Figure 1 (cartoon, rainbow, N blue to C red):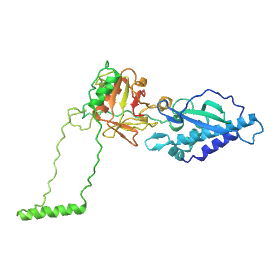
Figure 2 (figure 1 turned 90 degrees about the horizontal axis):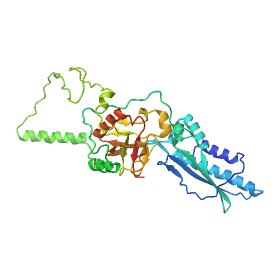
Figure 3 (figure 1 turned 90 degrees about the vertical axis):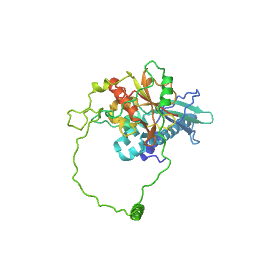
Figure 4 (figure 1 turned 135 degrees about the vertical axis):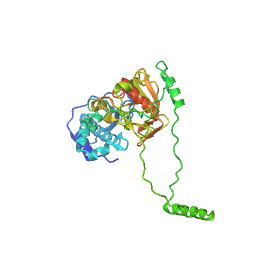
Length: 373
């Protein structure tokens, strides 16, 4: 992946900057380079060799340390470029569009923390650096998320569809909630075959065949006569609230009315996405099967997003502290937008929105995605 010039400049500046002698730790610690979505941190390892032109051992060590740091910053820039912010939008795409974000990301990289450093027996230096994805101090989220002047309200439930009833209650163990939820929610079967619509030529051919059949049976085609359409007052749906008997537009219910429909006093939301190849992103969206976004960054306080992230990504059913002691567990039926957005059935999304009106767990970012890590 091509690294923007600004990051190359950062690495070069650090390489040539004056630096005091380094006190290296000798204990062996295992670090894995890359993005750790579970712990929400980026880790890189840089290495530098003792230069042969050094006049003494101290100078050789200092030069090797600078080279290792420059290598670490270069790798950090490469990894951060590929981090997905939302769907197809990567950090790299944002850097090519917004100069202000480019400056912020560069400053964040310069502030990466050294968590381990070691002199190598074969004559070199190794440094491990980390940078948080989220947090109030020098995080990637603080660099890429811009504050919005308005926070959009969460959408209303689909009034024509009954919200789902959860097959568990507050006393049901969490493991059992996953079991019964997966048993009652089947993923959507993807369409494997596509039949294109009839072309204009085939439609003309079909008309010809029909006319021939009519002629064979001594039938004629009557020209249609035009009648002025009559307007009939639509009958209101029994589940839709109207302000007057003659108004056809549904009226938004109050928060108290929606909250009165809640059932579980839930403390958070867990979306089971196992088996759907969910891809972690910094700004995920939860949608219903109609395509309505029921949870996204526009509904949330940006400072909270920067501080704690919109959701935890976990791969086991034990690490769900973020969702509290009584989480609402639902099963995603699909994923969209580069496999980053979980999709819920409309009954399940209705239940999520109604319960959120009661305990506001979406507003508080008490969301967890269970996926195959």
